[in-house]
Image 1 (spheres, rainbow, N blue to C red):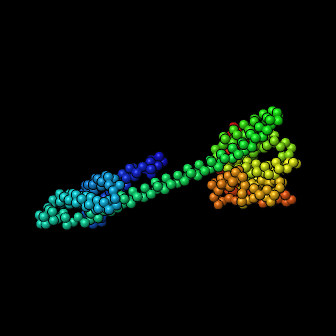
Image 2 (image 1 turned 135 degrees about the vertical axis):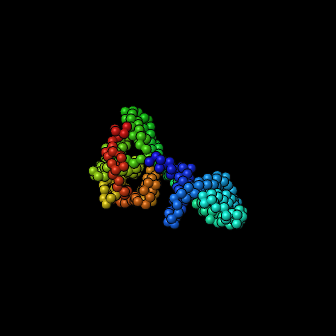
Image 3 (image 1 turned 180 degrees about the vertical axis):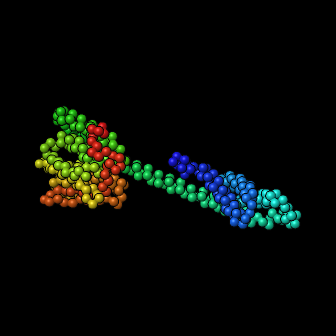
Length: 373
């Protein structure tokens, strides 16, 4: 397997393999011709001499072509025609002389003259050298095209990865800003016990969230556990005003989702559905699998979209915009995110993504925060 990979990625190894295979095929082809016409087996020696000469001459062509590769196209074409002719002019006499020696018959040279004889039969050799040159340049351009495609894919992948990392890490500062403001308020109110509790919970949440690679997905069970840790921080702020219920089906719990997918959705619900009401509010988080897709719903009983324009489906804060962008980067057209009203009041955010079971990609289903930290 390693040898095959080396051959694919090493242009020098490819050349020597193709060179040997090509000239071996040339020998085999003419040997079959001789067998068909009943020529003696000893003629194989002639074919080997001819192939060896052709092999060495075309290796020389390779060095010439590598030297002129950066020249203008017109110069390259002229030089290819010229050096191919020179190679053919050298190869043809070698082939013919080997045959003269084998048959011990130099009468043709005596009859036509050495220069006239060799110059008159150079057509085949020139054609073969031109064919070899054309194949060399075709393979060279093909390899360069493949390398260019690979570089383009790699560059696109790096840009895609950088975009995802940027979008993911924008979530933490947004949440961090709100939490630190709450801690600052508690300190000003001399509520040091709650402030200390929030700092401890914030530290645990940030450690767990930063431990997960934004390029790696996690199962929904792990994401829910991370979300519960986040909600413990918000519980310190809102106490009994914040009520949260989880309804995660067993199959859905094993589904792979982008890490910290729920946090901006729940943060949005808390900001507009809980914080704006003196009585607080309730949030419901649901996960289910249907028709090969994972559906995640975050529902609150806040004022809904009409009374809070920023919650309109076409807008949203930093967290929601980043969620849209992350899903678009990860799933393209194969996802939806919808906002709808809830009766008698409230907002429902529904996300649909392809259902991929965690165990199928080597992620342990039901991975917990304690296991990861």
